[in-house]
Image (cartoon, rainbow, N blue to C red):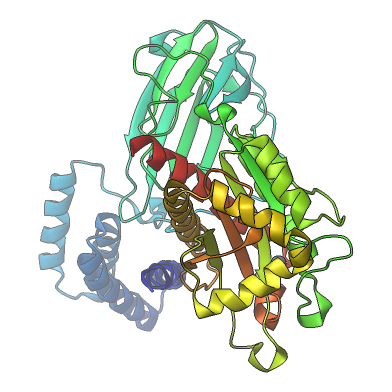
Amino acid sequence: MLRLFTLLLLLSTLLWALSSQQELDLAKKNLYSHSKERQFSAYDTYKRYYIKALIKDDKALILRCLDGICIAGKKLRIDVSSYEKKRKNLEKKSQKKPSKIEKYNPPKPVTVKVSKNKKSKRLKLSSKRGLRGFRWEDKLLVLSFDFRLKSRDVNYFTLKPEGNKGYRYIFDVDAIVYEKPVIKHREIKRITISQYKTNKIRIVIESIKPLHPRFSFEDNELRIALGVSTVYAPKAKVGVFKSQNSKRLIIIDPGHGGRDGGAVGYKRHLEKDIVLKISKKLAKILRSDGYRVKMTRDKDKTVSLKYRTKYTRKNHPDLFISIHANSVPKKNAHKAKGIEIYYLDPKRGSQRSNRLERKENAADYSAMNSSMTKLFVATQSRAKVIESNFLAIDMGQNVVSRLREKRYKVKDAKVAGGNFWVLVGATSAAVLVEVGFVSNPSEVNLLIKNKYQNTFAEGLADGVNQYFRNKERR
Ligand SMILES: [Zn+2]
């Protein structure tokens, strides 16, 4: 709701800026016309905008309007002495040159995104002080230059944009950039590098959350440590860090596959296809976050439940994530929707998950029944149940917030305990994610979209990261 409001506010500000610009341009034309009527109309417009400018406390606009009122007043022989006084006072206060009507540009409330394909013009500069390249080392952004950096070459400051969410960290470096590099990091909103002045580049790091960057120089490198985690950015010296994540193994288990299509959804979209796509995206993101990742299947093939649990038990993962999609019979197809995350809890299981358990366990339930029961008892500890519960909560919250960030309307994720055989193999935290209902026409239409799948996977990965961060503190 708040986001919608902000968006509307932004939109109305933009529309206001556009229409006001047109009106003020017209007023300026009228002001210098020979028709008294048009001059009067200009006088009227400036007076109207003067009030608006006062309310908005827009100094530039106030000055512009006062200018207009005074000029029109003289032409129309209206007494505008009080306005003249105000203008003089204002000019004195700002101690700036009186702004001329011609010079005024209204503030732009929104930035315009430049399309990706548009290549920036190469700057013709002869300086040998160029930015040569960049690379990521965990959360460390390393920029390498053609020359040895000294502290006087770099000017660092932060900006908190007024009325805007987020933070801006700015590095000005005495150098040139040959081509605008595309630098992306999934936890950072935007990184832009541009030629700010002829011999100065500006690096702007925009983030929703505070990053507290630290930076250091090493020969020809500017090393910027980003992120709040001290693991990645020790205060004293910035070196090469290997993240804890490289020691952690995560097994991702895309449900069903091959002969077993899983749930058949609206327009015959199959569970096995959707969950494989999301699983692969999740694997990719987690690998880029430094984790070791294994998958029980990475293509469309039949995988028995027995194999999944055996494979998991053999590999001792730190996390096990099974990905599924839900469905209900046709008569409830429009009603049932939403994300559900289950953790293994032998003692619990709501009505809802009992039905789901039967469905997800159905694959080869009978074949594994006896041997699995022993295993089930042997491997379930209270600690695992609790850890799995934490993981489920972290994932649910992060998926929902990622999706809402991208303006998808989703309910809070349901988190519940259940008895899913596939979760038995893991000795540490394990969850089963039901990404949504393939039986729901609108939900399945999202679930098959690449963008939605990406956002979903990013949310799950955020959940994993948060789970480990919290675990370190527990
Ligand atoms: Zn399933």
